[in-house]
Length: 313
Image (cartoon, rainbow, N blue to C red; front, top):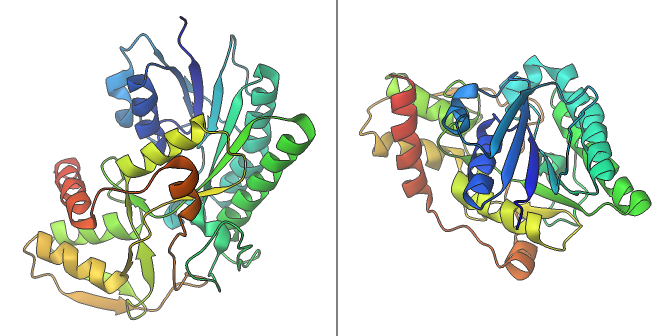
């Protein structure tokens, strides 16, 4: 029996590289495409000698040409941290629009299952808590974060159009805050930011009063949820994340404790359009995918700190 082939855009990134590992481990052939704007070859170098793995350096906002049969197209290409998409706003909009269109066109041509990596950011600064998939969101389309939020909202609309018009078997995963090994220590997101500051004996920077809340899902849990969704018959958006909620202040104190650090905390003004609350309603993932996260925050942070300590040495 021949192996199934998965094509992953953004496969050298934080999540994309873990997805490459997961699918190789499950017996797939994997074609990874990335232009290394925010990803890194270091994330996938251990796969270069694997006969079932192929890497292509290419910008998916340009036409994609892949020879041979594809069973799955997984679109993970996009800057994902605020630092990245504020630095590359036009590229972020292009990969969410042109890149999604190209990836969907490839899936249509190959008659492949298509999975879009969307985000909790489509909910914006939510007025509903926790956020179910039926919530339409509260997004500022012309704000500084709009380049990412609206790119993902457009990508979802394009994906559902291909599902309805071309009958493509499409999936949409709305990813909530995820952390773990292979995050860049200069990523700009809250977990690596705090860990970097503590490892370098710098005070932790908290924006606002630190009472804004987040939910943190360890990367192995997230990838398992995505894999289950990929193999499912679901076509509507599905939240994947950890529903346990922590304030940013509580996260800072836990990271200080795990490092036995005496670093202080400094406060700065809250960035514009920064969400005050973020927690997924994962009722559908529990019911239809039989999935829920297993890794506790303390356990996941210890693994992440160890990895970032080595990465920054």
